[in-house]
Amino acid sequence: MLKIDNLHAEIDGKEILKGLTLNVGAGEVHAIMGPNGAGKSTLSYVLAGRTGYEVTAGSVTFDGQDLLALAPHERAAAGVFLGLQYPVEIPGVSNLMFLRTALNAQRVQRSEKEASGAEFMKLVKAAAGELGLPYEMLKRSVNQGFSGGEKKRNEMVQMAVLEPKLAVLDETDSGLDIDALRVVSDGINRMRSPDRATLLITHYQRLLDYVVPDFVHVLVDGRIVRTGGAELAHVLERDGYVSIAA
Ligand SMILES: Nc1ncnc2c1ncn2[C@@H]1O[C@H](COP(=O)(O)OP(=O)(O)OP(=O)(O)O)[C@@H](O)[C@H]1O
Ligand SMILES: [Mg+2]
Image (cartoon, rainbow, N blue to C red; front, side):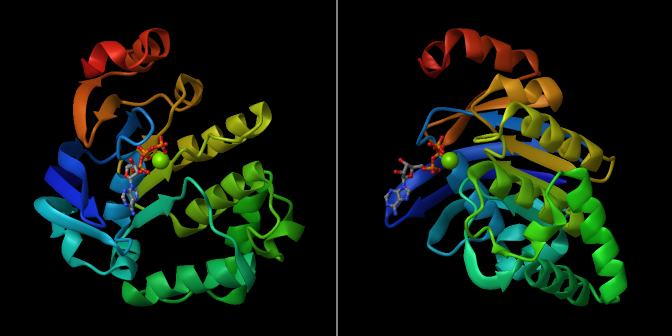
């Protein structure tokens, strides 16, 4: 589904990704772990098409298409979702308005029928209910004044409504309390299906107890330096990155 080959990318002339290769099959969950500054968020931004990041070599193919040739909104319509490490606040735009606009923009781009008000409300209420985000919060401006954990839950509500084919979740577990971690993990697990894939960027093995990955990759200095199964996360938790980076 997602094929990243020898990806090199830089920001402000500084090379961050230095030949990253990764293949994610449909239905799979891949965890990406690695030290601070290794390039994990950069990878997520390059996949989503954030401006300022220049790809200098390599390729990314998503569902057989050249992902890098698509504009960010086309990538979203193709089914790429990015859950941000630091979700942004959008004052003056309600969650409901934001989500409905995003959903329908994607549907129009895919030549599908737009969701009616009733259909949309049903979708969003179900998603918020499952993720324990009070409906009242959906009426508030996107993430404004939300606590860290509420922002992360809100990202998951967005994901549940948009139903992406590829979810890239950047430290979705950080800042969640113990119960929220379970709720959000359940949300991610519910989205698991044979035609969807997930890239889970995380620092902690804890999340991977709930969302058991098919593969764990270690990203160090812009490259994947080790790949293993779920057990690799336990090894990292015990030994740190020192042994691997050497
Ligand atoms: N505009 C910029 N100019 C120069 N370097 C930058 C710029 N933006 C980001 N970087 C650097 O890129 C590197 C990779 O950052 P990135 O956010 O991808 O790391 P990360 O693996 O997600 O780390 P963390 O685990 O702390 O979230 C960092 O060293 C960061 O300082
Ligand atoms: Mg990061």
